[in-house]
Length: 166
Image (cartoon, rainbow, N blue to C red; front, top):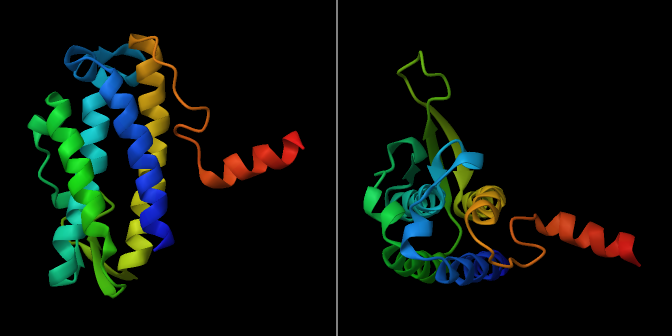
Protein backbone atom coordinates (compact mmCIF):
# COMPACT_ATOMS: atom_id res chain seq x y z
CA UNK A 1 0.00 0.00 0.00
CA UNK A 2 1.40 3.40 -1.01
CA UNK A 3 0.13 4.96 2.24
CA UNK A 4 1.95 2.36 4.33
CA UNK A 5 5.20 3.14 2.50
CA UNK A 6 4.71 6.88 3.02
CA UNK A 7 4.11 6.36 6.74
CA UNK A 8 7.21 4.15 6.88
CA UNK A 9 9.30 6.90 5.29
CA UNK A 10 8.31 9.51 7.86
CA UNK A 11 8.49 7.08 10.77
CA UNK A 12 12.06 6.21 9.74
CA UNK A 13 12.91 9.92 9.64
CA UNK A 14 11.32 10.44 13.04
CA UNK A 15 12.94 7.36 14.60
CA UNK A 16 16.38 8.26 13.22
CA UNK A 17 16.09 11.74 14.67
CA UNK A 18 14.87 10.51 18.04
CA UNK A 19 17.77 8.07 18.24
CA UNK A 20 20.16 11.03 18.10
CA UNK A 21 18.51 12.75 21.06
CA UNK A 22 19.41 11.96 24.63
CA UNK A 23 16.63 10.81 26.93
CA UNK A 24 16.85 14.20 28.65
CA UNK A 25 16.47 16.11 25.37
CA UNK A 26 13.48 13.97 24.42
CA UNK A 27 11.60 15.01 27.55
CA UNK A 28 13.02 18.54 27.92
CA UNK A 29 10.63 21.51 27.80
CA UNK A 30 11.16 23.69 24.74
CA UNK A 31 10.41 27.41 24.94
CA UNK A 32 9.67 27.51 21.21
CA UNK A 33 7.04 24.79 21.73
CA UNK A 34 5.31 26.73 24.52
CA UNK A 35 7.14 24.55 27.09
CA UNK A 36 5.94 21.31 25.52
CA UNK A 37 8.44 18.56 24.84
CA UNK A 38 9.43 16.62 21.76
CA UNK A 39 8.18 13.54 23.59
CA UNK A 40 4.71 15.05 23.96
CA UNK A 41 4.49 15.56 20.21
CA UNK A 42 5.70 12.01 19.56
CA UNK A 43 3.14 10.62 22.03
CA UNK A 44 0.40 12.53 20.25
CA UNK A 45 1.42 11.08 16.87
CA UNK A 46 1.54 7.53 18.21
CA UNK A 47 -1.75 7.75 20.08
CA UNK A 48 -3.71 8.96 17.07
CA UNK A 49 -2.47 6.00 15.06
CA UNK A 50 -3.30 3.72 18.00
CA UNK A 51 -6.85 5.12 18.10
CA UNK A 52 -7.26 4.29 14.42
CA UNK A 53 -5.89 0.78 14.88
CA UNK A 54 -8.04 0.16 17.96
CA UNK A 55 -11.14 1.44 16.16
CA UNK A 56 -10.61 -0.68 13.07
CA UNK A 57 -12.31 -3.77 14.48
CA UNK A 58 -15.25 -1.91 16.04
CA UNK A 59 -15.61 0.40 13.07
CA UNK A 60 -15.62 3.48 15.33
CA UNK A 61 -12.66 5.83 15.63
CA UNK A 62 -12.59 8.56 18.26
CA UNK A 63 -9.30 10.44 18.52
CA UNK A 64 -10.56 12.47 21.48
CA UNK A 65 -10.66 9.36 23.67
CA UNK A 66 -6.97 8.57 23.32
CA UNK A 67 -5.10 7.33 26.37
CA UNK A 68 -2.55 10.16 26.78
CA UNK A 69 0.11 7.84 28.16
CA UNK A 70 2.84 9.98 29.73
CA UNK A 71 5.27 7.03 29.55
CA UNK A 72 5.43 7.52 25.77
CA UNK A 73 6.41 11.16 26.15
CA UNK A 74 9.13 10.43 28.71
CA UNK A 75 10.61 7.15 27.39
CA UNK A 76 12.04 7.50 23.90
CA UNK A 77 12.84 3.77 23.67
CA UNK A 78 9.17 2.94 24.30
CA UNK A 79 8.17 5.52 21.71
CA UNK A 80 10.49 3.93 19.16
CA UNK A 81 9.02 0.48 19.78
CA UNK A 82 5.49 1.83 19.47
CA UNK A 83 6.27 3.58 16.17
CA UNK A 84 7.45 0.23 14.82
CA UNK A 85 4.36 -1.53 16.20
CA UNK A 86 2.05 1.05 14.61
CA UNK A 87 3.76 0.69 11.25
CA UNK A 88 3.49 -3.10 11.33
CA UNK A 89 -0.26 -2.82 11.88
CA UNK A 90 -0.97 -0.64 8.85
CA UNK A 91 -1.44 -3.37 6.25
CA UNK A 92 -5.15 -3.77 6.83
CA UNK A 93 -7.63 -3.65 3.95
CA UNK A 94 -9.73 -0.56 3.47
CA UNK A 95 -13.17 -0.52 5.06
CA UNK A 96 -15.83 1.96 6.07
CA UNK A 97 -15.43 3.48 9.53
CA UNK A 98 -17.29 6.02 11.61
CA UNK A 99 -15.34 8.95 13.03
CA UNK A 100 -16.83 10.18 16.28
CA UNK A 101 -15.88 13.66 17.44
CA UNK A 102 -17.08 16.66 19.37
CA UNK A 103 -15.57 19.77 17.86
CA UNK A 104 -17.01 22.23 20.37
CA UNK A 105 -15.83 22.28 23.98
CA UNK A 106 -19.27 23.52 25.09
CA UNK A 107 -21.15 20.58 23.54
CA UNK A 108 -21.05 17.07 24.98
CA UNK A 109 -22.71 15.17 22.14
CA UNK A 110 -20.43 13.68 19.53
CA UNK A 111 -21.15 13.75 15.84
CA UNK A 112 -20.62 10.75 13.58
CA UNK A 113 -18.86 11.18 10.24
CA UNK A 114 -18.55 8.38 7.70
CA UNK A 115 -14.97 7.79 6.66
CA UNK A 116 -12.74 4.87 5.77
CA UNK A 117 -9.52 3.29 6.95
CA UNK A 118 -7.33 4.58 4.10
CA UNK A 119 -8.66 8.12 4.55
CA UNK A 120 -7.82 8.01 8.26
CA UNK A 121 -4.32 6.65 7.57
CA UNK A 122 -3.84 9.57 5.16
CA UNK A 123 -5.13 11.99 7.81
CA UNK A 124 -2.72 10.57 10.38
CA UNK A 125 0.14 10.77 7.89
CA UNK A 126 -0.48 14.48 7.27
CA UNK A 127 -1.01 15.04 10.98
CA UNK A 128 2.34 13.37 11.72
CA UNK A 129 4.14 15.59 9.19
CA UNK A 130 2.60 18.66 10.85
CA UNK A 131 3.85 17.55 14.27
CA UNK A 132 7.25 16.70 12.83
CA UNK A 133 7.51 20.34 11.71
CA UNK A 134 6.95 21.31 15.34
CA UNK A 135 9.40 18.64 16.52
CA UNK A 136 11.94 20.14 14.11
CA UNK A 137 11.57 23.49 15.89
CA UNK A 138 12.12 21.81 19.25
CA UNK A 139 15.12 19.80 18.09
CA UNK A 140 16.69 22.94 16.64
CA UNK A 141 16.28 24.67 20.01
CA UNK A 142 17.80 21.96 22.20
CA UNK A 143 20.40 20.22 20.01
CA UNK A 144 22.76 20.45 17.06
CA UNK A 145 21.26 17.45 15.26
CA UNK A 146 21.18 17.86 11.49
CA UNK A 147 17.72 16.90 10.25
CA UNK A 148 16.91 15.93 6.66
CA UNK A 149 15.79 18.91 4.59
CA UNK A 150 12.33 17.38 4.13
CA UNK A 151 11.79 16.52 7.83
CA UNK A 152 8.36 17.85 8.70
CA UNK A 153 7.59 18.91 5.13
CA UNK A 154 4.60 17.60 3.18
CA UNK A 155 5.43 15.46 0.15
CA UNK A 156 3.57 17.88 -2.13
CA UNK A 157 5.85 20.69 -0.92
CA UNK A 158 8.95 18.55 -1.44
CA UNK A 159 7.82 17.81 -5.02
CA UNK A 160 7.04 21.49 -5.65
CA UNK A 161 10.45 22.59 -4.35
CA UNK A 162 12.16 20.07 -6.66
CA UNK A 163 10.22 21.42 -9.64
CA UNK A 164 11.21 24.98 -8.79
CA UNK A 165 14.88 24.02 -8.48
CA UNK A 166 14.98 22.66 -12.04
